Amino acid sequence: MDADSDVALDILITNVVCVFRTRCHLNLRKIALEGANVIYKHNVGKVLMKLRKPRITATIWSSGKIICTGATSEDEAKFGARRLARCLQKLGFQVKFTEFKVVNVLAVCTMPFEIRLPEFTKNNRPHASYEPELHPAACYRIKSLRATLQIFSTGSITVTGREKAKTCKLIWQMPKVRT
Image (cartoon, rainbow, N blue to C red; front, side):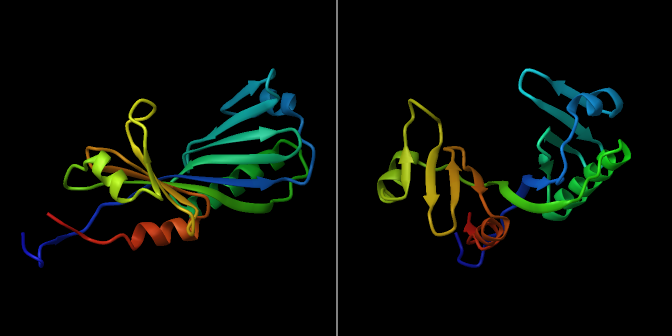
């Protein structure tokens, strides 16, 4: 192993979850009957609407709160949310696109080596926990960034953060790994 043989990690943002409000009451039955790509969950009181481009799934409540999942960037999430608001406007609702916020970002990367989870957890005890009976990954929490890393023995790491800017800061500043 050379000190010069640094390997850059391929980090993929796989899901961005955002929330916005329409500032109007939404008739879920009307959306289900007249909307396209819609699933009406009457017993739960929500409607699921899917868009093809960008590929997102929206959960719509009658109060006007909408959660969009499936985007791969903040720009794509905002574009999809605005597109969804426009679809609701075309159905006859007085939608105002307000209070847009990215609430969760999920990213994955794979290390070029395996990780011994019991030793990793022992060396990082205040921040790491590993319960192999409950889950195959070690959980490493970074309170200052409000992010959680799920570290698997295969070297796969899943990063989940509540705020996009802080999570991306963590992801892009991860050190290069020597092979």
